[in-house]
Image (tube, rainbow, N blue to C red; front, side):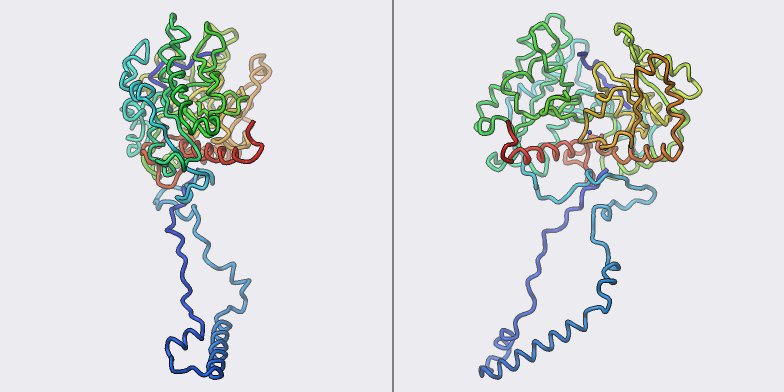
Amino acid sequence: MMFPLSNPSSSPESQIKKSKTPLDVRRKDSFKSPQAFLAAHYPSINQPRLCLFLSIFFIQILLLLALRSVPRSFHHRLHHFPAPVTAHHLTPTLTTTTASFPASTVKGETSCEFGEIFVYDLPSALNHELVNNCDELNPWSSSCAALSNDGFGPVAAGISSVVPENLAAAWYWTDQFVTEVLFHNRILNHKCRTQDPNNATAFYIPFYVGLAVGKFLWLKNSSAEERDFHCEMMLKWVQDQPYFTRNGGWDHFLTMGRISWDFRRSRDEEWGSSCIHKPGMRNITRLLIERNPWDYFDVGVPYPTGFHPRSDNDVVEWQDFVRNRNRKSLFCFAGAKRSKIKDDFRGLLLNHCRNESDSCRVVDCAGSKCSNGTSIILETFLDSVFCLQPRGDSFTRRSIFDCMIAGSIPVLFWKRTAYDQYEWFLPAEPDSYSVFIDRNEVKNGTTSIRKVLERYSEDEIRRMRERVIEYIPKFLYARPDEGLETIKDAFDVAIDGVLRRFKEQEQPGYRW
């Protein structure tokens, strides 16, 4: 919903945490044996025959009492026993809202079944100093506002005219390239963080590589050495750690706050850094807002949006708000032409939407119309049943998450825009939450987007929208450092996925 404060990206995947139950309370047997009972209460009785007789007598009494307590129709009565307490029974008490979460977004017990995480204390030049020198991260303007409020950016002023007033404080003008900062702050407070590296299953490297390389991406005269400097410094430091050499980096991971292609330079004269191609990076798992689908170690995580809930109730209330929204337009498109790109598809969609003005709401984002703290995108998605989501400057775009958080159903034209990117965060069945249209059929005029969307019945639309709304928690980055009370957000889902992956990698023959 909120477009970034910084410049666009380069060219080239709801659950309630199970409430933490108290420690497994195991009752000690409150019944002693008959012999023990007699010895304790009648020490004078020591004749063997008398003891045997009394023992049998007590056993018969116990059996009689037990049989009398058994229901006549035991198997039938089982169906009437109270249901065991589950996550759904622990939904926060609300008066006007309805919770909707997939099972994978419910927090479980406090035990860390997949292991614990050790967070490296890197040299500050690799993270904190980059933030402190925020005036130097962008060749055009300062990035200090974008990195304020722990990376969430400025509070979204004036948003209360678009969202429920009591949720306005949960909205920020968040930059799309700040996941490194968000993940670092959250992981320091994670329930499975350990201070002892010997107990760790996973090792997190809090390197702000996206911030480090960002300012060099747009400088015409930046050298390959400048773009690789911080990455090489990090690798030199990490490779000196005994826990890295132990497994060759297979149990290490980091967040890279830009798209994968910004770190895959093959030749010095090409775009970006060559960080991912460095030998030390080969086995490190990387969390990116756009992954290379053919690289096992790349994991796609959601782009940050503007909504950062403060509590479970914020999430549930927002879901209810978008579920009941009166949507006036069948579909919408928000974006700008790329005049330098031959057969620019976004330009085609702009024209297509204008020609269907009775069904489509269009927002032309040329210039700065969709940035610098405007709520026009959010309002457009809230008012539309479907939202058109072509590829961005790369295959993905933040707008797909802005769209779904608003409860709008995404219409995709490239499978790599979402289906091949965010498998931990999206439903396994693409048709359950999205529409896919062959872009070539749109280009040659054999398919009308409006006619395709008009074929969906109201019931089909309702089911698809509900699926989108159900998964909203997985697209969010919560505001509290410790996360939400019972709902897993994007950070929780990502960390669970990494720990589960590392556990699987311990099996014989898994690593190569």
